[in-house]
Length: 198
Image (cartoon, rainbow, N blue to C red; front, side, top):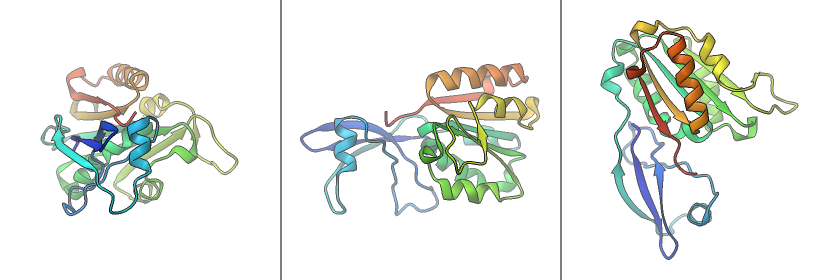
């Protein structure tokens, strides 16, 4: 969990894209792409059966062994949920090896929430704490509105026995790390990764 591939569109170029598929199904290699540049727009325009180049995997994965026996905070902003999704499934598959699991996720708007049906499913699980917030609500949104740091500030965890996996925009991660440190979480137990696919 946490590695990425270089995806190549022939004649256009390549970009680093996080692997977002469940690791329990090796037949499927999923990537979550936001079409914001030439290469990602060309990737999004591909049809089933079109050719794409794949190099990898690259990068250091999330330190899943360091999470065993501890409370685990999974904190994502925007596209940061995509590279954390395999880590979440890893935690859920071996649920008895971890103490409290807290998933906190923030997005710009309800329409920007990734994996919305999975988020709803995780919220219904009695052994998970899931908090979701959006910067800008629409008429149908009944949840939290605002940045993610208030959710971090009020999350339940034992700071001396917690590991945090954090991925999102740089500014969000800086405020989240600062909030976690104020809550007593040692800096060396906060693992961060900038969101890819931008």
